[in-house]
Structure formats: structure tokens, C-alpha cells
Length: 288
Image (cartoon, rainbow, N blue to C red):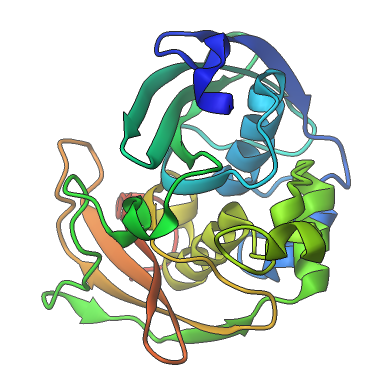
């Protein structure tokens, strides 16, 4: 069992690794999220969600995470733009391990930096380990994050609908190297608590990133941060709705002065993912 492995102890330092953002490396990701707003030229900044997704897979590979592991919470903080052609270093550690009844969680804190050690992305990812009781896990909410409801203050953003296909899931797996059978193998997934193949959580978060990039432009893409709570999985072929609320003031102690709450929900208005985003309106670009 993963939670009993020595490497999953709190404080364990993961072996550092590197990723190279080669030309063409983003093409499968762009196909998966339908990227239109960040730009596809070599001079356009790369999505930090894409970089973090690929970096975390490389960083956690020594842990031999078993099939069936899923994300419950993510914080992705973009500190500096990243561009195709760059080589990045990834480092991290196990910052938290929780075993509470039938629920087992592990959090990886990570940093992604340039060869001169300039940090470009940092954050953490919490994983729900196989064997946990999904109904009693953090998919149902978390005291540190709230209930995921949209704040009534501010202005509503134009909603966007999307259907994530099996081909999108395959494209994301090709991009990230995340071949967890929970996302690709019907027989395996059918025997899990989810009962079916589910979409990569980071792919769904990539859709939110694209939604925000299309809404706020360079204000968000230059220095945005995301904190996400994965409530329930998205299924391939399922129609989802992205909606949000923009607020004038960011709630946290940072130099970002604007915030936005985004929800991803099903056609039945069932909450699947809630995201809190922060960014600076002092970035160059169009007014929002």
C-alpha cells in the first residue's frame, strides 16, 4: 500500500528532475484543452497548469504512484512566465500525509525553476490514495477552502460549456505522461470506487485556465495563480459548464489585486470543481 511506503512519509525529499519544453511539446495539451487564448507561438507564455502537470508527473515518478490515485486539491502559483524551448528544474517533498479512518491523503509541495534557480512556479498537490472511501474524502469539501459557492459580489463571467472526449483524455496522457489506468482502462476503472474512466483532474483545471485566459487576457496569463478543489470527477463525454464571478480585490496577502471564483458543474448543476484565481490588473493588456 502506498501510504505505508517509506517514501510517503512526511518530510521525504523527492529526487530533483528536469523537464525540457521542446518545440511541439504542447501540441497534445492544446488539443486536449482546445487552447485558443494563450497563443501558440514560441514567444507566447506557456500555461503554468500545463507545466505543473508535466513537472509533477516527472517529480513523483520515483514514488511509483499506483493506478487509481486522484487529485483532491491543487495550488499552482505562477511567479514568472515560462516559454517553449526552456529547460526547467523540478524539486519537491512530501509535506503532509494523513490517514483518517478509510481516507488516506498525501500532499506534495513543489517548486519549478530555471537553471539559475529563479522560481517560475510553486505550489502543492494533494492526492487521494487508492483504497480510500471516496464518499468520505475531501471530494465532499474542505474546511480550509470553503464550500465552493460563487461569491455574490462582483460581476458574472459569460459561461462556457464543453464536452471532454476520450480523445482529449488520450491527448493529455500523451502530453503529461500520466497513464494512470483510471483515465484510460475501462476494465481497471470499472473496479474502482468511481466505476468508470474519469478525466484527468489537471486536464479539467487546464480548461479553467483557458477560460480565465480568454476572459482576462494578459492580466491573468502573466502572473495568475489557481487554488482548486476537486469535488467530483468529470467523465469522458460528459457536458460540463464553466461559470465564474470576478471580484475587485484579491483576498490573500499578495501583490495581486483581483480575484475570480470559477465553478465547473454538470448539466444537473452538480459541482465538480471549484477554483479560486488571483491575478494583477497592473499587467499589460486590455482592460477587464
